[in-house]
Every structure is written in structure tokens, then in C-alpha cells.
Amino acid sequence: MSTMPTEERIGQAWRLHRNHDYAAAIDMFDEVLRKTPNNIDALYGIGLAHHGNGNTATAIESFQKALELATTSLKAVDVTSVVDGHHGANDLDTYEDDRYLLLQRMISQRLAELGASVDIDALAEES
Image (cartoon, rainbow, N blue to C red; front, side):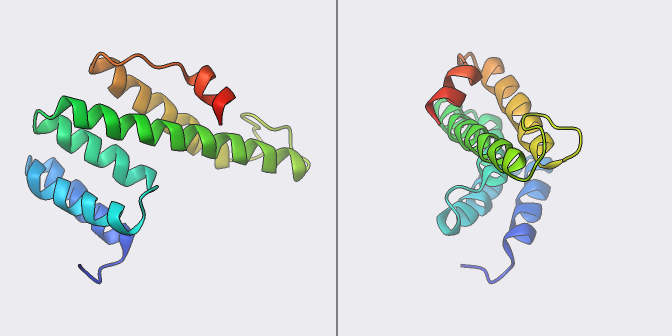
């Protein structure tokens, strides 16, 4: 396993993906996920790489896990925001929730493109 920091490995995986070397990108994202299995960025990236390689079912699984994590993370940020004296969901005084809102939207779009149904509201209630 590489001693390269996680962020650099993810960056390298994205470069491989951009160069349409999906198999190598999958290997690199998988390396990250072995070390940090709940890394949303790696899950999203490996989903795209699997889709590029024609592995639709595996791409959907990766996207669904990433969406669940993004939804759980957004809920945690919202709770923390309220505890810290902010308004909670999509509070314009904070920026933490924007990342997870954007990730939810991007991942949902990918799942829809692959024909998978998505109910973010149901996911939010479960988490």
C-alpha cells in the first residue's frame, strides 16, 4: 500500500479517471477505501470509475453508500449547527452543510442517470 496521503491518492485516482484509465482509478480509489471505508469522495469517484468501466450495478452500490454517508453527515452538521447557535439546515452563516447538500445532489443525479430510484427524504429520516 502506498504511503501517499489520502488526499493525494484521491487526486491521483481522479487523474486516472480523467484519462479514462478506469481500472487503475478503481484500484486507487479502492486503496483509499480499504484505509477509510466511509470516504465519500472515494466512494463517489469509484462509482464514476465503475460506471466508466460499464459496471453499472457496482457503480450504483458505491453511489448509494456515498449518498447515505452524505445524508448522515448533513444531518450531523445540521445538529451541530443548531447546538452552536446557528439556524440548522442550509444556514447561510455556515458553510459545512453546503458540501453535503452538493454531494447529495450530484450523487442523486448519477443514480438517476443509472436508473436507480432515490428518496433523500427517506434516507434523512433513517439516519
